[in-house]
Image (cartoon, rainbow, N blue to C red; front, side, top):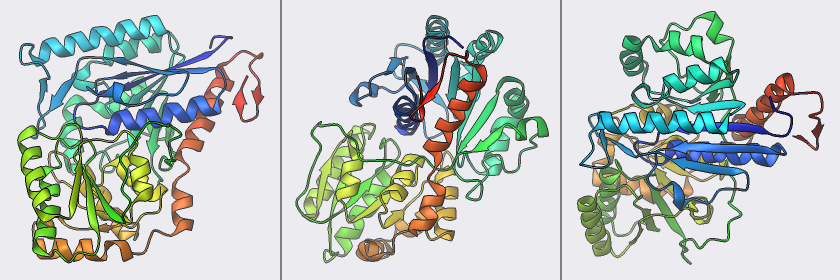
Length: 403
């Protein structure tokens, strides 16, 4: 590695929601806070990357956005450019960025070869140049059946084994194993590290965020692209039982389809109990101020539920991936949150009952949460070890970081 500084390049394909970008941003901020002189550059396909603030020494490169449809297929954000042309542009920009930035470490979020293989050539080029390659995985990728169906034709486990130096799983080993059901060779298994969940903290930003003076239940769908059904079910609960003790604050998400947004606004306003906002880049502050949290069980929202110790109700989706359902089921088993089955959520009476008791639910055991939430510390430790193993002798550890 270079003597004067260390560079980390991160890849976040970002096709459906905010999860990948927010996870990469969380990791990048932890790394630059812990390791002096480190620079992080995030390659992101999110159309709203610029809505978030980034710390000094963290920057991003925006590549053309792609939408993931409910069918699991992809389409370009622009109706005038087909998906193949978009992938070609993204691939070229990724390759040029990597060549210019010359990273010492490359961290790829979730998609081992990138969206439709757009990262593969760049990864092979970086590997040949001696870059340390890291694949970061969620605690749950998908159900074992669906993941195997997706990865087996691509021989993905073999490709991961051939390309990556490290695999980081952003969850505890005893919560879930994301490669369950896959034939993982020993050569790859020994390179897999379970970091624990990524703890979230209150942002230091002075940017304005939405506030409410009353106790409230926060209802969030993350990016919102697939959250309309859940929001409508919550509204139906308030329509059925106007006596639900607390009002709700709903965050639609920036990717909520316009037609769905209009319907939700109208129905929510008619209840007189639900306030609507479209997006808040400082969602952590709203979570802390809330009396309970309702979400779909995406990775980031789940980490926030645990980090801020909120009584939580998870209403997961089951298509196109079962990731949320698997995570919510396991969280329910461990009494970390309550899961309302998607079928039950369509029953206004059951929804109203769940919303009424939510603020009184017991919060997760502090001891259990503490044992699960060491992910950021762990991955910073690993990164420092990688740097130490590869760096020149004049890099020295001071105050928990590198000088």
